[in-house]
View 1 (tube, rainbow over the protein chains, first blue to last red):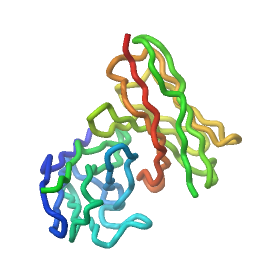
View 2: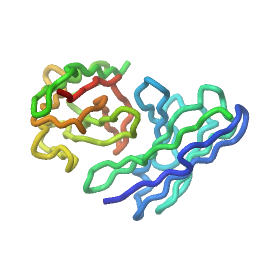
View 3: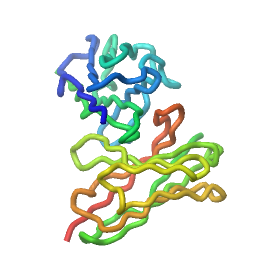
View 4: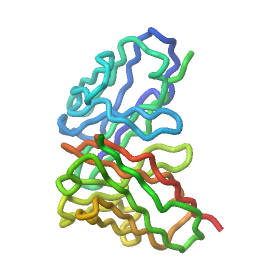
Length: 109
Length: 117
């Protein structure tokens, strides 16, 4: 089983700042199968990034993803007030079929 | 517009059963893989089950294997999750999620299942 560990658990920043979120896998992940999601309070998750670095439809270009192997990063270049939410990474594997990281909460400083 | 609408959640006693439904619209349901993903109160996301577009291939998380059954009705654009022998730890919001290229590109709004006496 591939375990995804996200860091930090909570990130406190101000609007306009740059956010860097990390997702580390316990074993190598196929880059095509690494995705990032945003979840605002009371809402369903929303796909942000897939294939480690491709933005989903309608996602602003301030969101970017990078990485390969076991280390992946989600970067938000300039934080907008609507970006304060919880972010999850997710990978497709074998058993279980899909796993999620535990999440990073991005909060307003 | 792609829409996924879950229903069937509620309060059930430990050991009881519940059947969740997810109604799809705005896309050709029969050509997409779909999944159930759950989220316990205040916790993270947990994948529960997968079903292929035809329904011929199914997978479960170990935590629900042998108790939950996923199925689909392509003619009526419906996804189901039959949940038996429910436990307190099954308490969660259950989401149906469409899968494209091994990622979940559309999610329903979720339905809350509470297992408690």
